[in-house]
Image (cartoon, rainbow, N blue to C red; front, top):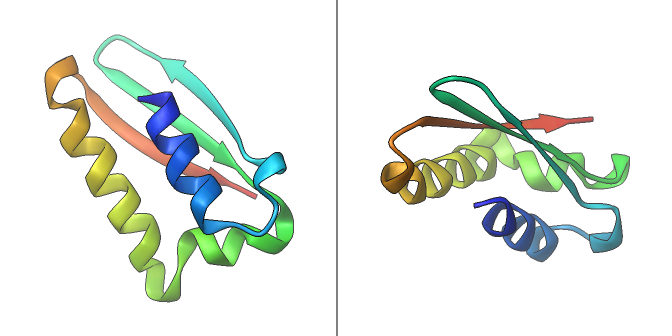
Length: 76
């Protein structure tokens, strides 16, 4: 799952070497903290948050097998 977030984010940004994904696991929640280069934050979020919402939808759909709630936080 972490690789999925990383691959999608690297495809969107101009500085793929600066993409980092930190995983925080709690009881029934997994949080993927995505950090990118400051110039690329807007590209990951997209206009009106559309790209961020699509990224969260893909990750949530892929996480159905985990039986946990999954969120993606974009760190600046």
